[in-house]
Image (cartoon, rainbow, N blue to C red):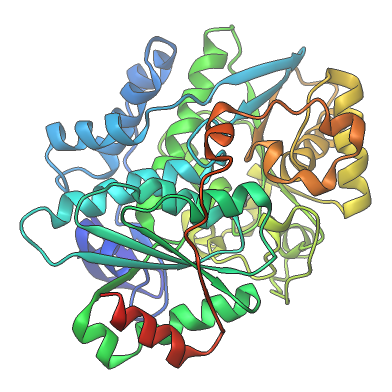
Length: 436
Ligand SMILES: *Cc1c(COP(=O)(O)O)cnc(C)c1O
């Protein structure tokens, strides 16, 4: 399977090039040239497969010819080695828990798969890959833990001092091995500016093979389709097959993967695009006018995106037919007050603690289900992160109920290996050259 750029559909590149470039020269995004339809037999029998089996079947269709099947299977078995359970909260309300990977967020699916694909393509004696990544929290943890110990790769993570949660910081800074963390005295935007400057610096490019682990990389999108098929499989086993997915959305990669799964033949009745105050997409679905705006800070900060980069992929899936798109996707937007209200309401109703991103998706599902009482559709909202990553948003009673995973306890007391630097590019460059 080859990939085209959304800005120049006539240009085709193989998977390896799409993965290492991350972003095409023309600043479009890579998409598969054709989207394979999975067989009815596979879809109807999804209930009889495990997550790794489903992942392999999906990947082998969409990546046909890019990686030999035995190697692809090994990559998947290594990358997708944790569960994504669908948990029943009440009749026709289920939560798809995507936080059982090492960084406790759904980004583990993308980061672990991408790291192994990159390492696979590098194994024939190619130059070591240097991954530079700026993070405001969740991306860095997933990339750090995704690449940890992966041969022939080295990761340098830049994060803003004092602006990530304690658990996020531990995930970034305590790894050692091939993972380096830099605490930048500045904002996330300063971190991103340093990474961007490094990518266009001749001296650094001559010395290092630089790549970004950006969330728009096609190798992060594809594995996110796996858990939609697998969620459907779990519901089929419970006799449910009329499904609505509610997806907490920021950059629209997660819901983009769901729509890709739908295009591959997964039967989905409706997708709910649930955002915080950064409502560019819900606005568009309402008005038909696509108007990106500067992002605003909210409690669900992993979704603070005013210009969602993956939206162009979704437009391409629908060939810009707004009417078709509106039939399948409904937009919802909630402010911080409503987010906290929903966290507390879920706690009362289910004795269940949701992270702020997840609470927004639950609220959207409730609103949709109230409006569609006549249908018997089963609602599944995606839980994108474990609540312990966002301790500042919960009241005491809710906080007390959070069960901190073992992996977090193991990190406690481990030494932070981060290097403090200013936001000045020359200092960052000197550090990279000195620590080659
Ligand atoms: C990244 C992230 C999101 C947003 O996902 P997109 O794919 O960017 O829409 C939502 N919730 C959490 C916890 C995240 O880390």
